Length: 254
Image 1 (cartoon, rainbow, N blue to C red):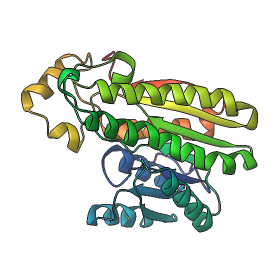
Image 2 (cartoon, rainbow, N blue to C red):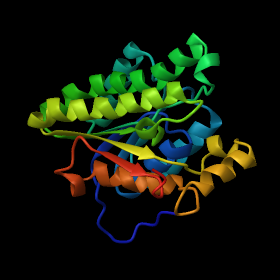
Image 3 (cartoon, one colour):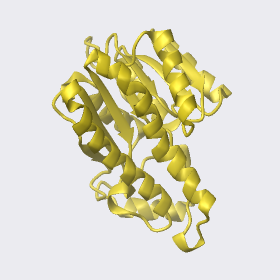
Image 4 (cartoon, helix red, strand yellow):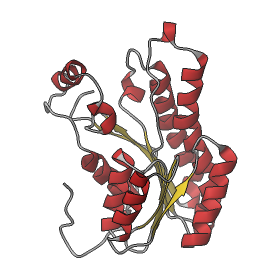
């Protein structure tokens, strides 16, 4: 578990917007940021008991926090959420595009809906929220955008053509944004987690999980906190000259 090791909070006074942060990697990022003094606005599909519990955990850390219900795949909804966050928090310094789903299947058997759903939620949502926040960041002449990609976006994976394509698109999107907006003081990067211990991976059959572990030189799954700390680095001024990059968090899997 991540533990704050000193009295200096590296995101003190900043505000982050994180999509899909009710649980899993998104929740870990939100909590990690909050421990570093960052105010946290986050979205999820609905304000479930789990989402409200995450909101309460964040507030207990002494920062400003609020959950918003939104479908990240909807362009106009993203604009509305960003306007609400700016009104509630005053600014947005950091955007983390984390919302994502899987609809796995071999390409031969994959239907159009499986393809469209994954591209919309994973890739289009990153466009939606990035498009909405960049005017705010451009006016401030600063900002860090981090999108959660995946190692399958770098290497591909059988049965995940839609997911891999969406994550590869996220990587290219961040690299392009970094070049477009670098002159305005904005940075954009991607992190590419490998096999991470989440509710999603826990639901896989044990045989499948074991096969993943066998392929990882470190012989274990990563944790959501390990992903969160990498995102924290990219969100903070510690990475002030790092932009347009993709950081794999995979125990040397690829």
